[in-house]
Image 1 (cartoon, rainbow, N blue to C red):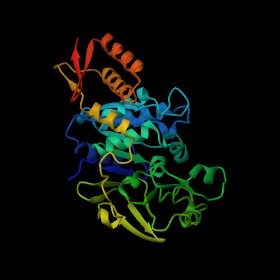
Image 2: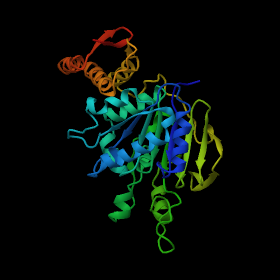
Image 3: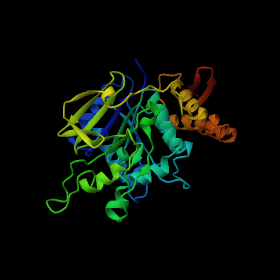
Image 4: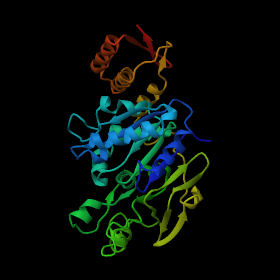
Length: 348
């Protein structure tokens, strides 16, 4: 048995009927109150990235209404700005999220903004602590070991090439990459837009550049695949199929299929759980997860975010910022006490 959470990947359709089924499938497995974080990063270059994330938040608020979710959008849009994925206050809601989503946008932009960032380390830390992760469309490409530069090739006409991805599954010792929109037909009879708009010919060029022993999982539209590490298996959910590719040999698994994870790779759980995550960020995530509220009155999301931001400041030994967060918490009628078991909120 492991505390590591599930990972769901969608070929498309995060706000469709199938997307809703997958979100609900994961919500049923979460025993505590549902706390959702939606990362804007893949669409952070768009002027309406907040609206993109907001539409997903509205969908989840309605679809998961029975679970009374607390939903935060994380405007971690661009390094070097007020909305950088390195800002502890921007990233604070990630610290107690138990379902984290990232979706549409540009795969290469998401990789550039998140690689080795506070936001990405917190996503990985929360997953190790049991949070479910959901990735769709561009984010599905970005989390692989090797990324596909979709816009650069399909829109800007660059030659086919690969880019290093975020490598989420490197944590488990398995070289995996992912292609959503596998069966796309937007080009009609005149243009092959399958394999995420690459078409089969350009996809084969990209695939030939992958390292030996690499595995690619292609996800049809409105179809998802859920990695369940507790059961050691994955499940195909949706209206079509998932394709597993090694050495150019595709194996197709239709909706409803259950696949043992050892058919995909030799998955090894990170040992210790904190392996590969900067110690200061691991401690930040650990201490916030131990937050105690010493009253029957519920603290607001704003107060919890301030507590999380204060913990982040303390973890990086920024005592001036930590004191400022404490004063802001007090101005809202609460006191935060530091105990050996983690912070405790007390109504003033």
